Length: 66
Image (cartoon, rainbow, N blue to C red):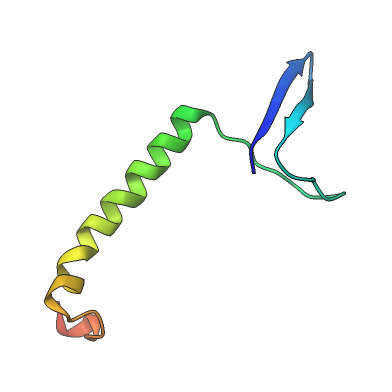
């Protein structure tokens, strides 16, 4: 879902929304730079896990790795 908002004083007014927002739904908004940072952090975590999938040991018990 994408939402376009404008700040008017202490209020955010929704200008446009790609989907209907259900009543009472709590939304957390992120800036584009915050989303890029989160995406980068998640990609780094996946990159750390990728060797185990390539080796085929994703079902290996973690205690055996340490």
